[in-house]
Length: 477
Image 1: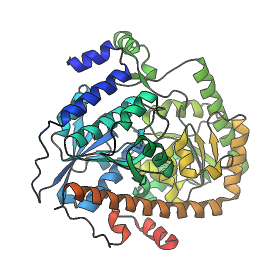
Image 2: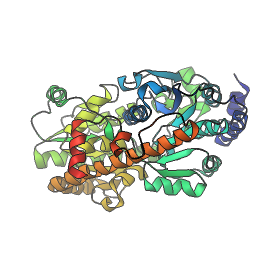
Image 3: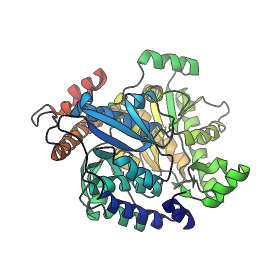
Image 4: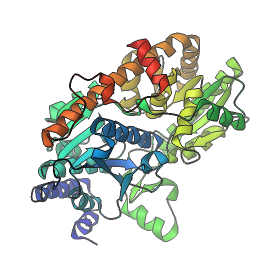
């Protein structure tokens, strides 16, 4: 066991100790050898995030991020390393990508691994916020800080920022204007700029993701028994058992007896659990089930429950048990992300607490009702939808409000679908502009690297897009 890990554990896995250690390592990174890249040789980029952990949204956005970077720099002029938190990598992330699996204490993993690359791309969407996992935000901030200190390219790509605990906020603020943070919405930029970060506009990257062909999705719907009537897709989660936190006692007891395995997230991280969490979780699922059953009665349609993250499987099962005839369930790991996205786009209506379920469905103009645990879905759908197609997971009378929201979405389907597709066209423009800003930052460090010309059409800064998106762009731009 390393001295750093020993000190972290001796502190009872204290986050302030972790931030202090990362700060020390950022200082040490200033003494790393500078990038050894010769002009004309490929640029080696390390993508740091939550890949391979069974989260469909995370995997989809990173896959498209890699495609966008390759489109901008040239596939043969960039080599990709990907920090993996697990080995469940979908095919999209196995395309000539070197997996850098975290197998030891991650601050030491970072400083050891970064020296092998010319730059770092922080790629998790929930980049700087405390309500999910402070440890992930610390890892991303530490990676960017070490890259800056050692003279390497450092970019936060498509970042979301929200409320942070004071210690995390201070650590992220200490990064200063070294890394370039490309925010996926104005609200995130408004969080980071007052902290002194060089934060500017950007977008999520899942907008260009391609689903399985329509014929393959049709076959999947036939096998699920959902091919011949209207379809409501429901994406639940447990919104109340976050953030995950280190718990050494639970980790020890799980190792010895198997206790707490239902709360285990990974490493030494566990979900919280108490009577209040369970009560609110059950009320939330009761509300989703009530609204979905009423929609079935209103339309004669079918329900498909989709788990976007492997940790959502329990919520999917618990939701299904609330129906007289349990709807089919598709969860992360059951089929590839392209199939899950295809099923979302085949839906007539979407009821979701998962951000990327909504994002990836929008290309098809699927009207969505968001049930949000934090700012992410609100930032996506817009504050104007509060009370109509945007509700909080703990809203009073949630069940009745969801019935009203689904009926509103059903009654205004054509207008919402048109507005949704128009919004996608706007997000694509923002994604392209993010790519342009990324290219400028790359050239600042590596002037020899060729990128699309400044006067190139904006789509030159996107990965290759599908005929459906080409048609959407032509219609709305």
